[in-house]
Amino acid sequence: MKVLVATSKPFAPIAIEGIRKITDAAGYELALLEKYTEKSELLSAVADADALIVRSDKVDAEVFDAASKLKIVVRAGAGYDNLDLAAATAHKVVAMNTPGQNANAVAELVMGLLVYAVRNFYNGKSGSELMGKKLGLLAFGNVGRNVARIARGFGMEIYAYDAFCPADAIKASGAIPVASREALFDTCDIVSLHIPATPETIKSINADIVGRLKKGSILINTARKEVIDEQSLLQLLAQREDLKYITDIMPDANEEFMKLEGRYFSTPKKMGAQTAEANINAGVAAANQIVDFLKNGITKYQLNK
Ligand code: 3PG
Image 1: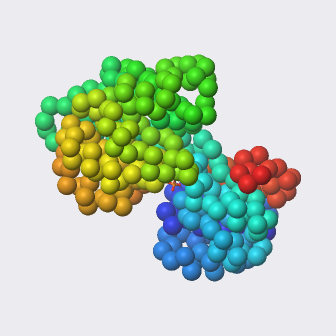
Image 2: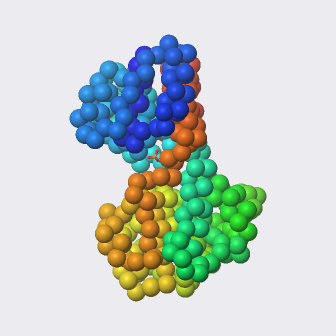
Image 3: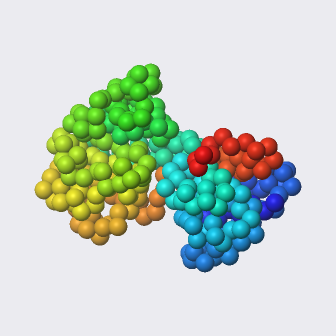
């Protein structure tokens, strides 16, 4: 059996070591395609792969067509908008993700970016503190819960809205549930996005909803750039000079956002899950899930059931 790790944004070497231990123990061959820039490289590398591990790499019908031996693809991470699940099913390939494995890394980045933002990007001017501020989590999955856990240590008041998570579960995790997205934006000083990119959420964060924020608020996005209606947000930020937008996913309209001096920051490359620990957690989980599936038929975390 051949397992291909195809990552245009590679794992830390220590994570590859961890993956290799698992594939060696299973008697599988491990192949690496790292830092590739052309889709054609992926298409030729998957030709003889039985299993595939990716990060945000796009795995679409063309990739499945080129991978005639492929039995399983695992997205080492949470969001699987890069996998064409219908094409996976059509090609009889099992698709999985590794939920929760990189959640702490993303949550720590949220807090780091927030400190950076409230301290005016360390420009020497007097800033403000996170203690006592109202933090709103839009979606309360693995990342949102980790942000809540860490933000409690900062003394923040934590609110959450999640269309799929009951209010009781939010309350049990120590956050205050609110009844709607609108209520979250009305209530909070900072709103942190943790929604996946789905047909329902794409472009759902626009001037109407963000415009509800109080004076001096911050919107932070470590989820997906697709959930933002960029032109609508830009228009709002042009009118509302009190608001800041901080993101870990550079918008397509980055150059226009850059004009909002002192109110905008984007990491140059998505950094949320870019830690050795998250790479080990997600990479090793992906390798274990592949072995569990190929040897024992275990389909826990299958997405295309
Ligand atoms: C995820 O969905 O798991 C995160 O966005 C991390 O994505 P990455 O593996 O491309 O860093």
